[in-house]
Image (cartoon, one colour):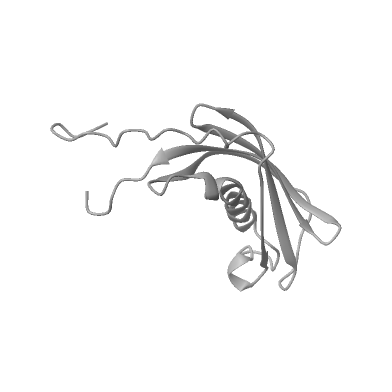
Length: 132
């Protein structure tokens, strides 16, 4: 809700090139900060972070400089463990665009092992300038 006397940033148009089929990929080497606190395995929150980064990479080059994407829903399945030192690769494919809402299908692999899958939903939003 806007504070009285202020306005919400106006929504910038969505680039029509943002359409299903776009893909993004990112990877990380599992390190201590990516491990679950109760077991020395790749944590689900760290995997979700990697998935979000891959989805962001899929559309980054098509966003206006004042736009970004924010996640608002993740349905994740963590299917297999990975140890410290494993290289986890997330690949995200944009499957649906509805206005400013984006839907991605994401997989995370370590070599040939499928670590996790997700349906990830993001929204394209106008960034508020710092200090506003």
